[in-house]
Image 1 (cartoon, rainbow, N blue to C red):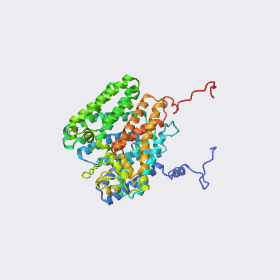
Image 2: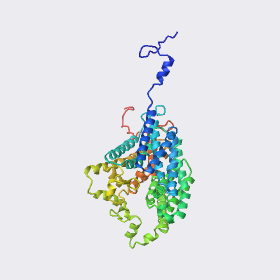
Image 3: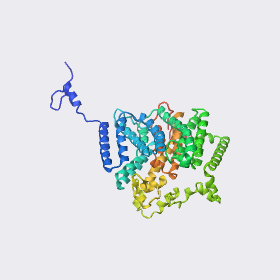
Image 4: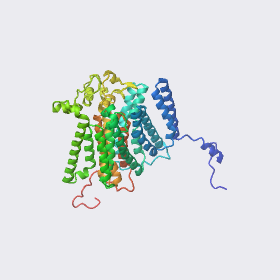
Amino acid sequence: MSFFRAKLSPAGVPQTNSSRRKNAGLRMPGASTVLIALGVAFLALLLGAVVALGSNQLTLILAGIMLIVPVVAVVNTKNLLPVLFVFTFLVQGMAQYAFNLRLAAWLGSGLGALFFARAVLELSSFNGRRELAPKPAFGASAVIVASFLYLSFFFFGMAIGHLSLPKMISAFRFCVPMFGVLFALYWFEWPLNRLQTLWKLIAIITVIQLPIVIYQHFFMMSSLGWDGVVGSFGLGMSATLVLFSTSGLLYVVARWVRGLSGPLLPAGMLAVVLAISILGEVKAVFVWLPLALFLILRQRVLKNIFAFVTFGLFIGLFMGGTYGAYKALYWGDVIGGGKTVEEKLDRTGGYFFDPRSVNYTTGEVGRGASMYLWYRDPMPTLVERLVGYGPGASATNAGTGQGIVAVRYRRLAINATAISALLWDVGVLGLLAFLAIPLTGIVAGLRYVKFSGADPERLAIVDVSTVTMIMLSTTVIYNRALLDESTLQLLMFFSLGCIVHFCRYRHADAAAVQPLQKPRTARAGALPGR
């Protein structure tokens, strides 16, 4: 005889085992199941709407996404992120270059969107969710707040911008998917060896670029021009090649600085990156590589006067040698066409700062001129100055059509830089919110390296991530790759994610986290504990 009363049903009748099993089958579906069902229904409706529009390109993209959706339900974020790396940094660019397949860039963004969806799915799952207890943050939350603030301006502009469905999909594809990498590294605690593997993968892909660049320089540049040397990143991505390769070099150097490797590997990687920089003409390498190396080597360079002088001589040798190589390989006729020093500088990059550098025949607009056009435009109201015309307003995409502002300027590429594109699309407030994302990440990374007391592996990853963010932040006045190129977006949000991840999660094997400010010195005569 049981000493415990049987559980009663609402009618007062004791529940048997069979009735319990029957009631258990009537439980409400979990959050993950609801999200999957809503996602599938949304994709089905979206696919039907796109088919009705008659856009073959968008139809193929969405159909491919729906075929990959079942994979996302099985593969978790930690296994999906390496796949995203390989596809984005190697496959999609080579598909564009070899087969002129612009669709590959859309597939990369689609895979990023699926990664974002998988991260949200894991966050909503009770079984897979991590305990998000308060951790020493070092400002990591500020990065997430800035990200949500920018996305709020983005979606607000999309709501008021009266965009057609193709333009809405295009704007979403350019902006949102790669944010999932940042959020996944913030929401979940990742194994240290997985993040190490991903950074090592970046270094390996950097080495892979060298034979590709050699082939493109000697066999393809004659038909494609200087910008034809792009590695595995696709047409017009020569700057991305240099930025990515420099990031791979920085990780190897950061490990050497922390005593985790010998000097031979950094020396070999430096030779690889120098060869890539010389074989592919990118003027900004004169700024990016010296700045990045100084920041990652700052502890050793500033250690004594001998190290500082040695580094200065190396940078002088690099800049002189690279200038001579560029002059011999690319600039000979261009520089020779100028009669004065001013004309020579203008022909080799001085047009960057010219606010009136506009070619009405080809539609090319200089970087300074693109911002000057926004400043001098008489049409915007105060609201449009603050929040812009909506995402895609300055776009000149041939597939989805010109934006509302781009139509007014005809063929002119008014969105030549990220700053000018953001000013037109999301206004001054949206621009400030976007700039706050890398800024807060850089501040958080610098504070972590200075005050955390973590082990050398974590310090090396956060240090290289911080320097990479500083380097990428300079591109907002150089091009608009951070807004519409998934390759640099993935590198940016992965670097940011590494910073916020180590700032957020405290590890047992790391040293004790120290306060963010220097401890106060005890007053003379003060008793202990007071």
